[in-house]
Image 1: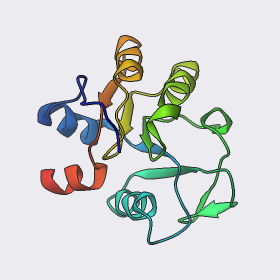
Image 2: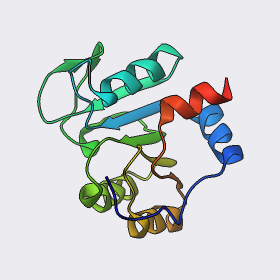
Image 3: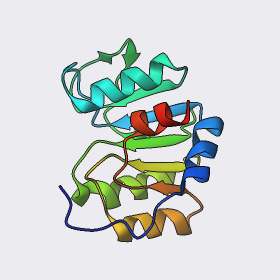
Length: 142
């Protein structure tokens, strides 16, 4: 859990816009374990039509998709990065998003907040969602 309260966060209209515009989601920390939140959320997003790209230090395939070791290794465009890692690594993930130049959204799952990194992402033109579940928010819009 994070000790920070999100001071930078998308509102409901922005979240709706995110889900209507995003096609490809890199999931940082996507576990191969079906009982883990990252797996359940990614599987749900995949089931409703989003292209999921797993980023995980092990495994070759998760949810039928090739696994990459880092965001920089992904050869195709990425619209959104969904983060299932501790808050202390968020700044490096945001820097990797900036380096790619194609990431439009940085999404930090429930309990993950890093306001400084969120400000950095926002200043670079990305939308930011903190401490929210992409699956829950998508279901609530449906």
